Amino acid sequence: MKDLKNTTIVITGASSGAGRAAALKFAQHQCTLVLAARNETALNEVKGECEELGATVFVVPTDTSDAKAMIALANSVNGIDVWINNAGVLAAGDFDKTPMAIHEQVIKTNLIGYMNGAHAVLPIFKQQGAGILINNISIGGFLPVPYGAGYTAAKFGLRGWSEALKGELTECPNIHICDLFPAFLDTPGILHAGNHTGKVLKPAPPVYDPNRLADAMVSMVQDPRSNKYVGSTSMLLKVAHAIAPELMTKMTGLIMRRYLKNADPIKLTDGNLFNTVDYGMSTHGGFGLPGKPKAHRKYIAAALATGITAGLWLFKK
Image 1 (spheres, one colour):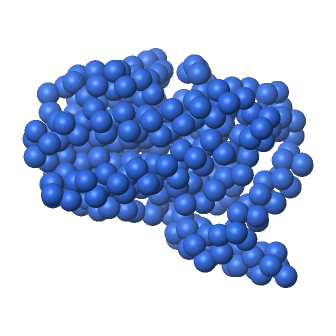
Image 2: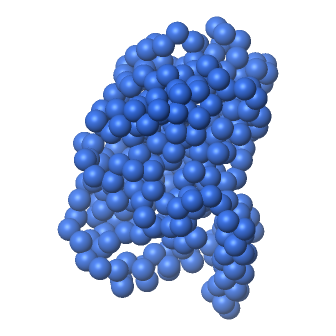
């Protein structure tokens, strides 16, 4: 699909962050977009922006954790070429001090929501004999996040589920399952997070522009591949964890504890886990350097890798 004009693309989590960035990127190709999220007001804002770029846009308010709602989303248009599983939530806190309802909701959205999407669209792809399913998994599919146990459970589960799905579809060469593993992104997601740490949360640097992930999504549609790592840091973190998993896990826990010890206090909140919010619905979260990827970020990633290697050595000593 080098020419994406008139391609029908469903994007979940399109109201903000990477999903919103993806909608705007695909709109430049004059695609037919089906935008899904819980926040209908924000979706309509994105719709207007995409229509100005020449796209045909449908808004379908959807809770991805609701299987019936996802089937209705899949049936909202005739024929789907691309389905992008992107909607996700965050929650942070000591595992035992965070209510189980919080952990369950993170898994329902971040894991079951993706499975609901695939379950709804794969019959359409099989009937057509073709289709592309893109899963925005994140480097969290390889690297555990201490104080985000529910999030880690969902992301590790996503990676395994997607691999199993790829095995099932080996006899369907024109149906592609594509997984994206971006590093930390400058999106409002962390502002929407359920926060039971009592401290202000910030993403770990270096933080990448969500437009970089949106570009990767467009690239996946034009030239599907099984996996793509977005940002040098993503691959470096994966390799570091593969080489020394125990040390990396201990080190990330140490870094998180030191950060939380020094961070500013904040009230506990469930964020957008159970209900949508009316703030921070932009593409960027204001934590990074908005704009196109710059060459110097590779040097930042290299410095990070050096720091990780040194830290692992010191920690081992």
